[in-house]
Image (cartoon, rainbow, N blue to C red; front, side):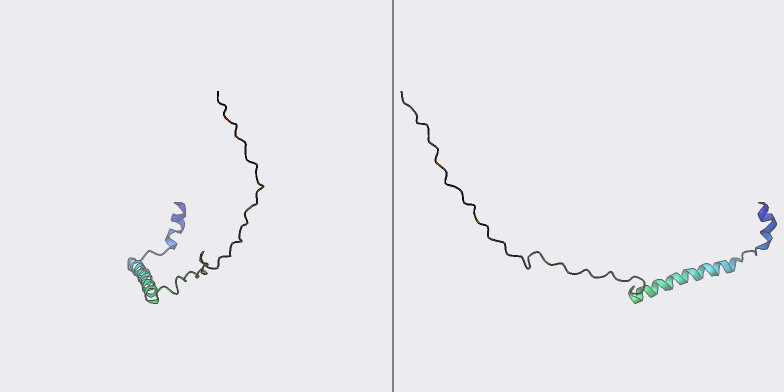
Length: 87
């Protein structure tokens, strides 16, 4: 409070007409920027994202599969069945 009493008179009084004109000017500036952005298509304000390189499709240029060879098995001996005994 003491600061205002000593230095409060150093600041000029706020002119309401000037404050209103300043606020209106700021609003018009924003409106003009929006209009310019719409007419330019937003090319200057927002740069387009870089195009991604095309990914190869999964079906193109497949490597041929190596032919699998069947594993040779040793011939197994047949199991002998236990013969049923008759009484």
